[in-house]
Length: 159
Image (cartoon, rainbow, N blue to C red; front, side, top):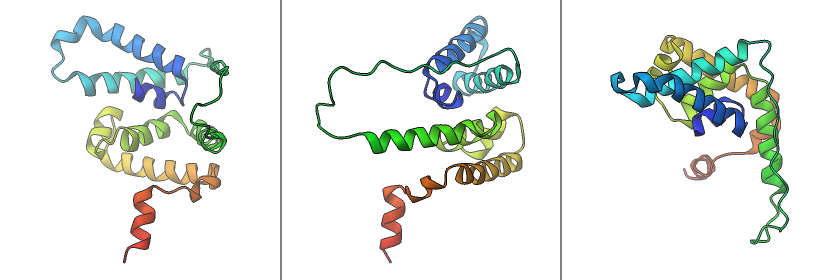
């Protein structure tokens, strides 16, 4: 489900539809599949690309209802929400292939060989696609450059 969510650009309902469609298609072959996880990931990627290519497929953006009560912790989540919105807009500017390469490589933490197998291309193509995708993401959202993982900031401080 997480892979579908990221593959569809953060649309929960589209991710549910994608997963349901793929699982329904693979249900009849389930007993013949040796390793179901990579098989389903590849099927999800291919289905998402098919939907993306269809001109008649229009995605709707759904928004959850606003909560009636404030956050019990008392924290303001405006900064986090802004970062998520900026990242979502930047990811939406990527092609589905670029987004899939980033999702598989970094969010699913798969090695390049597995990503190449899922996407049906060579390892070199995965490397160049990821490199170009990151460059395009950085250009689309330069305000995200200030965000670093705690590990990165620790490495800069430590000699």
